[in-house]
Amino acid sequence: MSEQQIDAERRHRAPGLTVLGLVALVVAAWGLLGGPDLPDAADLGWIAVGTGLLIGLILILTGARSSRRS
Image (cartoon, rainbow, N blue to C red; front, top):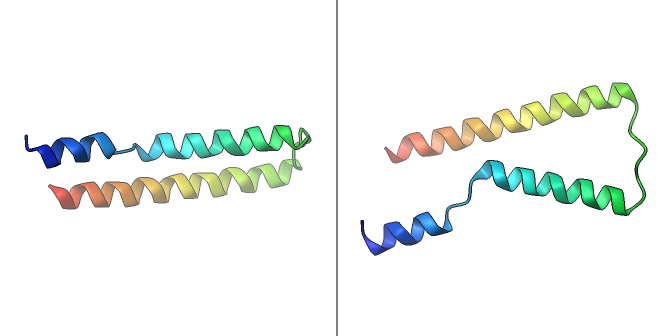
């Protein structure tokens, strides 16, 4: 392995861990701001749909990017 490849592996961050980190920060901020009230059940459904779409797009984009490297 070349030195450049080793440096690239050290800098690589898993996108899933980044998303989980951001979600954790948002939940922590929500708790600190005194927002323990949950949204309406109808809103929770749309939030779940939006989250699923976002995760799907991230998986598609990261999969397309990694397949081009091969």
